[in-house]
Length: 150
Image (cartoon, rainbow, N blue to C red; front, side, top):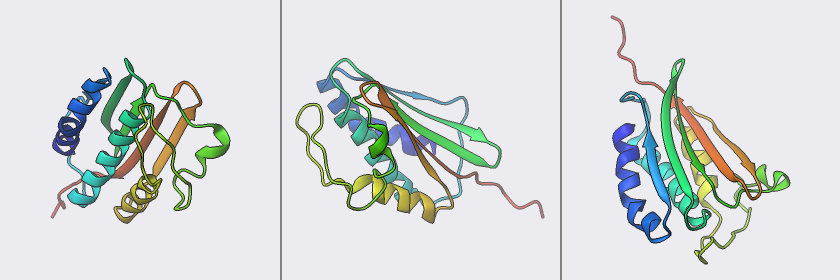
């Protein structure tokens, strides 16, 4: 998973630099998960893309991963515009609409819907914590990879 995250950060690092956004990765260990690599790559691209899109200049985005029992927990935390409490439950719905980014970036408003579906297809869950004007943390879990004991 670490490799997947680092590859995604590399893709968005130049865009983040154009907005003078610090994009960093935090992990204390290399974590292997039992999930579809391409689906998780799509999830990571969408989450980091959204963080860059909705974080104003001189902001910060932190991507991290940690073990949590038999799960890996991955998060993308930004210092962006945040999401109002009443809209948070709708962000993972298909018809949630789109919003312009802090530099006029556009989208269709479907990305988080697909993130939720891809995470669920890989036996995980996805969560959002946000405060308007303060930023957002979107985290998801997927099972850790473990070899059978026999």
